[in-house]
Length: 141
Image 1 (tube, rainbow, N blue to C red):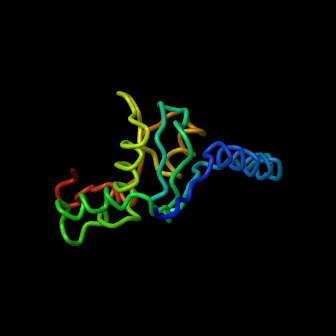
Image 2 (cartoon, one colour):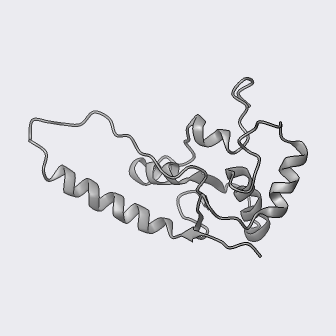
């Protein structure tokens, strides 16, 4: 069986809070940041209910979803980023088979999860991450 690679998402949240506290303690009182940008490893995915992870996140290099990748290869367009063992869609299907989540469960990328931790709004993502879930940028579906 291919090797898995996963991480505890709570560690990311705790590290993010530590970094932000350290940065804000050094800010000049008159400087108030207007925006914040978060990034994460592409195709790292976890399932949440909606703010609580159901388990570890599957990292970008997790290769356990071979059966799921083969299913995607049969239906996804040839150039789709959703194809291959490293895609978010592969990880989502693997987690769905393994965890059997119920209704209301969210699939979140690493940056999506951390953004939700800061804002309380979970389920928001960006096009780059969604391409690996199967988003077609031409039809936006």
